[in-house]
Length: 589
Image 1 (tube, rainbow, N blue to C red):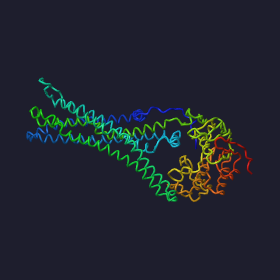
Image 2: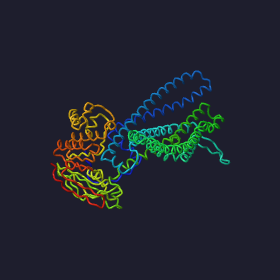
Image 3: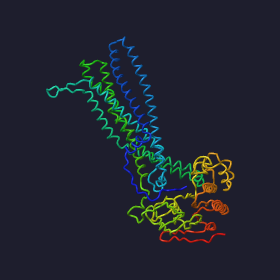
Image 4: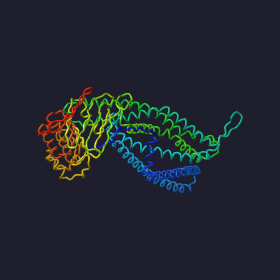
């Protein structure tokens, strides 16, 4: 069934940013649940930071007890450690559980929202028709999952890192004390010098990491694209296995697949190149971090300012602060992939929000777009209709016609003249050109292409598409199958299968006719919908339509003159710079 929106769209795409992708869920109808889960997770993170802080103090007491061979404190310290460990494990497990729950709920909401926008208003068709972006299926199935999960993980980890940094910076400032250095002949005290050392160390590492690994953002973006192209190419082989086998085209498909995989290989070498550089910096930074705090704190330790246990506490606090300040370094690879995912989703949102008219509404062309209006009249009419290609080149001109209820029209014309494009314009799928179309506002329309779409599911689901299978009784479905010479499938109504592979082209066209008989639309548009049938079956199909749908309007696009006996009026569509004419055929007897 068809009911496109009227008129060309004039809406311009909004500014797309990472925040515009993140914000909608947190102000949506699920905001209370989302914020409740988020606050609970943050509270758990605070508890984990508190436990880590207590373990830092325990670390000092433990090493002091070992150094002093204090056997009486050792059992008590082990009990404290056991309690802290049990609490840490329990909170960590449920913290992860709630993170997964919130991440999936966010993904579910995003998926629903994107599916509605992609499928609503025939946006999916416009994107494919105008080749606006690649692999929208991957962006919905893969990128949204990665975006929700990674955004939540990075955000919560950053919050936890800031909480940890605030707590352990205080510990490091107070425990490390001040370092006295000589500036010439003047002694200068540097308070909290261990904290400053950790900050300088982390900043230096972050700057070096960004300099070395920055290209990974664009490389990861390209990697997602070439991987999707390769996967799509393999899916095409699977879907067209029989045709490829008939053509003996295996070698050609192998070469095409190898070419697509070659793009993955070339991009992967770039990934390896910059990952190697990043790994050098990351591992070198991590190894030095193990010994750096002890080296910096050793002068005060050897001077006898603090004990060995305090040195270990300082080392642990320094490592924690350094790790917190190194959040950017530790997550750089993840951030690069996240940025690439955000870029792909921003691009996808942008093309979904583009106006429906593309080149044809550009000031550089003479076409302003075809306007489809729904009016309170009983007939479908066209006014000064001109069909054009997306680049603005005129395809054909159609004279004004009035398709009255119950009439039957035959659309003729040479190949490439724009017959199918004319039906697309009537359906609101083709905005390129000039003129207007007025369609009855309450009329139910069904457009039947040469090869109809067969969804996955039971045969009844396929037969009743696009309506739900429960909308029709089994007996009505069986009757339609019998009328359309598909008796062999009557008992397979509830069988799930790949029906687009099982049914022959002729059987698929009979099935499309059965759909029409069941839905009983007011207007039926047939675009070469009987091309796979012989003349006897084709005649029987049209006889069924005229007998079972006596007051319905039928518009047929065909090259076969034999169908003229089933139609009263004919529209000839000529190529550009010729004229389309309409004339009335005498009623058939």
